[in-house]
Length: 480
Image 1 (cartoon, rainbow, N blue to C red):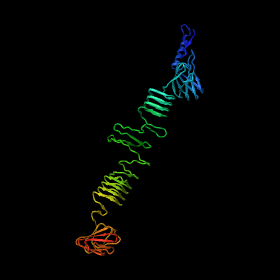
Image 2 (image 1 turned 30 degrees about the vertical axis):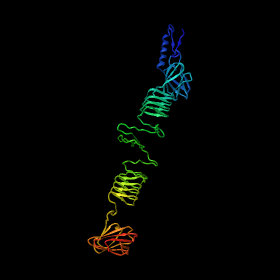
Image 3 (image 1 turned 180 degrees about the horizontal axis):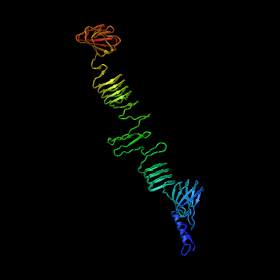
Image 4 (image 1 turned 90 degrees about the vertical axis):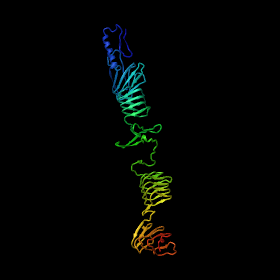
């Protein structure tokens, strides 16, 4: 009987009584062929040719290029390199040691599997010429679609240039995806590098950090709100580091105990620094509407709109001009270096000090005294005590001059006082004095003619008031 061969293993098949005397040699050859097919590595040399075709012979000792279980590609490859395997049912582990990608196929035109340069793939060829690939690699580069329905564990680098659809993915190395990535669950202790789109249906937990190689890192939620969650005893916060990452500043939500839900808009216009609640800062070009200032030192002008109220709970110290369209209420000391203009009510709880002009359209209400440089305006302060002849000075306006010596002369000068100025002359200890008004027009109240000399009675009080013109003085009181 003639010998026959399997279409798959290509070994010698013997029937009873055949190959008498040669049976042992043929059996050994067959066993060596089986051994080669299940565990042996065959080197496949390339010399720059586009296609290397493998073959298997019947009843032949190893090595046979197409029979080996592991095919180690060596030599020099060329672009579009093809390794053609026999048209049988056979599994191969292909280690591509070439510098170019290699296409694995049989005599049919398609489909094919590409094993990247320097990579290893497990391929399977059927007798119909279909070549399948089981993509389980130590270090993988997948060009097509990489789909895993359960778990994927990668200890090295997984690089996918196509699309991925992974239900449960765990990697301690680098996941580098150029296409679209859909992950139901992903746990990465290394780096996730996505060249196109990444869509995560669940929670994306990253132990490292997000980083892009150029441009800005853009986050675009569906609601346009990026929410930083808090937990335990820590509020949600964002830390902005310096360029050396040696220190940083945090934006922190108000504590849970405050129960605060609100919005804070960033400043308009030019670049600006936010003002601290308790820190020392200088702010300029601000218009305050209904401000409440509890203890203030302001180095420039302050303008409060006509509908606003200036409310300082303690002290207000303003080194510029205060312009208040509404009301101004100060609980402590009110000190202004320049001018004050108030269209409403100026209410000062204790003291008000104005170096310039105080202009109030409505009412000034004070819980304490109102004073000028001479003191309480409800009093007639003592300007000076005279015991000899004396000429009145501008500092005596609004004050009293006390005479405590007899027969002295008090001269009223010209071009010193203004209309409205009043000086009080008071005699004590029974003393009298002469009021000399030769330089001005002096009229005793009730008289028709002016008199140059007037006598202040003993223990008398007289007032000199400049009225109508600066050189017209009207005298009242105990004078003759």
